Image (cartoon, rainbow, N blue to C red; front, side, top):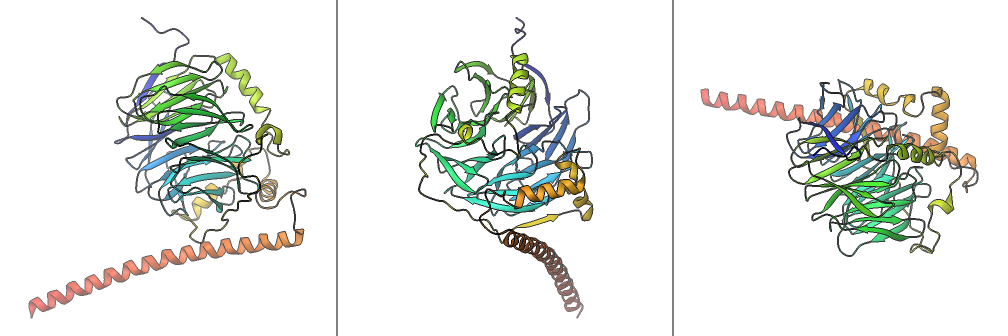
Length: 451
């Protein structure tokens, strides 16, 4: 019997990876799909049939996460090789490598304005990077075990993270403090994300559960136990009314959050499903898993309502306005009141090394990263103001001191890059010396044999 018009439909599948698919991400236009895999490659697929796919080579170990920038002109990936890479999503696939984590990196996430990137790692830290300047900004340290995922809130003022220490933490990006903490005694969250309007978070549990928390009142709103295996990933529909889940039990499930019930179970994969993601408009979603397949689905449900909800959510995203504290922050006293927590804001091991010379810098220091209709000078000034200098209401030190500190930071950044280049040259010299010694030893052995 044919499926009802509102049922999700499997449109097509992509085969190209040689190992399990760990992450999928749609481009903002919805015309391309990026996938990451255990085979160490990224693949960029065109959603149109018969279109050519591109394979990106650069990581030396499992690629764990991939995401497009909000403008679609960059692609970020994380890997177990301890690096983060930024790629140009075209047929050449040029990339730049970031090194700061000391253990495998589990997730990458762009802020909604494209200015920042958050990375989560098994070194127990979350690191935040400035995309316009291509530099490391600060680390967040409070987790006591591997951090599996970190995501920005829609307005960029908060970061939510989950860890194998069985906690979910919410961080304020302005003062770098942990402002909220949810803990679980049973399992840990594999994945966590904000809903489209930023008032709730969803967690995908290793204990087979999906939980929805309201961060305004610090309460668990909904608790779903619909899977028979660990939940590896969740994705909110842009309307905020639905959430889709991917599980090790081999199924995808769609939950109606307004009615609080399971509405669809989808079986297309053979084996655990590791990742799922809605497109920006919500009309498509994609999934990937241990069977190496990437499946592309069409939602076909609540499409008109979705458009209305997206318009309503967009009205809330005002990046330059003052925070809506009543809307986002907990109204009840939270467990961290009275205990000011600090974070580490420097990292001596940070290195930002383009692997293909100055040409990469021209690609990544592109003003179009922020806004297509602003001049480069205005963009640079705006970005510097937003990322490094606090507003008048927040400033507690004189402007002259702030300028001096900014200058010092610039000099430190130059020194860091210089040291990194020297390290590279020293490594090359050591390799050459090793080759010379090996050649000398071989010659010595030949002379000995002749004599």
